[in-house]
Structure formats: structure tokens, C-alpha cells
Image (cartoon, rainbow over all chains, first blue to last red; front, side):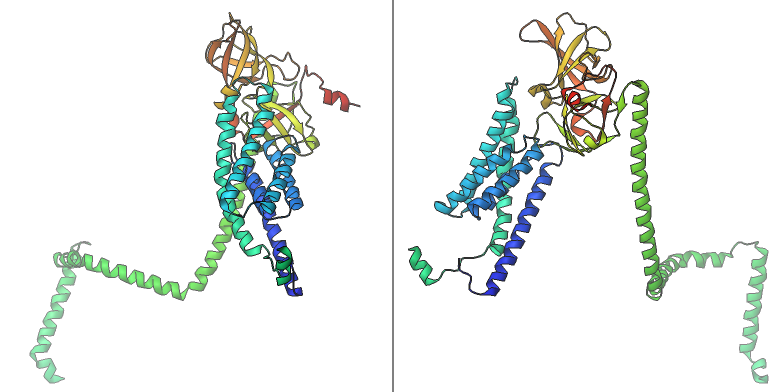
Length: 185
Length: 291
């Protein structure tokens, strides 16, 4: 991306700062919602981390994934770092996929979120319940893990819309010169 | 003037005044009751007067509102301020009332169990998200003298055990979890011992399970199950829950009972942590941290 003038640089700086402040607010809000009440809730932070990964650099996505993962660990009472590791890997992969192969379309986001949140729920079930061989443990998978996955998928639509609005107004647009285009081709 | 005094108009006027004086004297003799004519007029004009009176009152109100708007505005502001103060006082009062109630309950438990040491009442910060066994976090931690494996109770009975302690918060595993076992006994028979251990299926209904019961037990529905205190992890004689159903395990060798906890674990608001009690077994953590 080529920035022409100091004014453009200043606008980019302001937009990026506001965008990240909004990211942090959304992450904290999702965490708060996840720790409220005793009923089943979506794991809001998974689609949030994916939304951030879609539009950002691989390393930034990985760091954000780790942060969201730590928040999930606290909210879900899991080993501190377990979900952080998972989401770091998933977010880095998602960022790479979008950089190399995928276009920023809603359907792409939906199947990726479905896959990642399913893996997150399934691994949680495997490591925290099935591995310990509780009697009737499959009840947890059907009555909790799958429901949480479906709720997460539904909530991901709303989260996508929120991020789409943020990115529409605050994501810097690429300014390519004719030389850049010729070089790129 | 002389002409007027001699005229018929003057005579009619005098006659009319005399008539009015006559009516006046007559009405004095009625002792407070209206004359029939006056009464008739009152009756006929009552709706009209009511209507006109309501209109005049409304007009007066409107005029009054415009005339005294500053005064009313100031009065309204003062009243709003007073309401705010009273609401704050009410909220403080409610907080104080809740605290007093909790302390009163704590005093009752202390009387029942003089050998136990209790923490201050702890608020529930939140339930662990999507945990089938309803683990929760409380707002007291290491700073308040809480250590891992301290029993957690409400005035009604035991609810779980502290499994993780940070400086100002602690995480509690509940009696719905299969990872928590409590040695217990039926208070009615005082002979039927078993182990309280949650299961996946019972936890779905906010219940727990009493396992390893002798097949010839005498437990009945609605019997109270209490801690036996033999493990050293929980104090003796604390209620756990009541028996809801009884069955035989699939191995045919032991029986089990489904237990409804004394407290609704999915709707807890505050709990107490039992930091010490007679017969307490020293945990690894305490052994490591005792000087």
C-alpha cells in the first residue's frame, strides 16, 4: 500500500487506532456476555477472532487469536492457555487462507467459522469430558457441545455484520500506482 | 324625582322589594333548608355548573402553570433530588438488609457448628461458561484466607469445594460434578453410608447421586443426606440434599439414590467458605505452605 501524503498517513493512523479500540471493546463485551448467567451461551470470541483474522496480517491474527483464547479459557474455566494455543493456530491459518486463496465473502467466513468453532467444541469435549470416561458422556456432546456450536454459528452472523460495518468505514483501502499494478502482474 | 316616586314603576319596584324581603323572612323560618324554588333551580343548574366549574378549574390550572412555571420547575428539581437521595438510601438499606440476613444465617450455622471457621459471605461472580456441572467463581480468594479444597456451603447445606484460588477470586467445583466425591450418610438411619458423586445425567437436572450404598439399605424417599466427615475434606453433619429416587446399580451389587441438593446450585447468589473445621485433613497445598 502506498501512502501519498502526510494527511493520508494521519488518517490511516487515526482509523487504525479507532478500529483496534473497537476490536478490544467487542472482545471485552463478548467476554462479559460469556460470563453472564448459568445458561448455555455461544463462544462469541471464536467468530470475533476469525473476523479479525480475515482482514489482518498473519502475525497480528495469531496474537489476537491468542488473546481471545485466553479470554475463553478464563470464561470457560479451562486450563489457561489451552484455547489460546488453539485459536492462535486457527487464526493464523485463516489469515493465510484469505491472503492466498479465499475472497472476503460471507459464505467463506461462514464455513470457516463453522469448521473452527466445531473443532473448538469437539476438542473441548474430547479433552475435558470424553477423555475422562464419565458414564453417559455423550450426553454432554449432544446436549451441550453441539448446542453451543449451533449458538456460536448463529451469533457469528451478527458478529460478521458488526465487523463488516467497522471494516467498511475504518479499514484502509489500498492505493496502487500504475507501476505497482504492472509489477504485481 | 317626584314624578318617579309617584309613578307605577316605583310602586312595582317597592312591591318587588317587599316580595324579596318576604321571601327572605320565609327562608329564615325554614331553618337552613332551601326554598322549593331555589332547590329546583339548584337541581336544574347543577350539571351546567359542574361543567362550567371544570372548565374554569382547567383554565385556572393552565394560567397557574404559566404564571408559576419557574416555581414548579424549581420544586420539581428539588423533589427529583429528594427522590434520588431516597432511592439511594433505599438501595443502601436493601444492601444492609441482605447483609444482615446473610450474617444472621451465618450466625445460625456457627451456632450449629461451633468447631467450624467460616469466611465472610462471598458473592457469586459468575458461572463457568457452558460447564455442565455448574462450576462458579466467587469474589474472595487467597487474600481472604481461602485455600484450595476448602468446602463451600450455603445456610442450607454443602454446595462444593474450592478448586482454584487466585488473589481475589476462587473457582468452586459443585456437588453436581463427577470429579467431587463426598463421604456421606443418611441422617434418618445414621447407618447407610455412601459416596456423593455427580454424574453427567443427574447434572442435567441439577441433581447429584449417592453411590456405593449397601444393597440392603433402609433409605427412603425424602430422607436427608448429610456429610459423614470421614474423608477429612468436609466437616461432619452438614446437609447435602434429599433423596428423590432409589435404584440398584447395573452390577447388581450396590444401590444408588438420586439426590436433590438442599440449595438450587444453578441459582446461587452468595456462599460461605469453611476455612477450618475439626477433623480437617491437611491438604498437600497446606502442607507445602505451612511454616
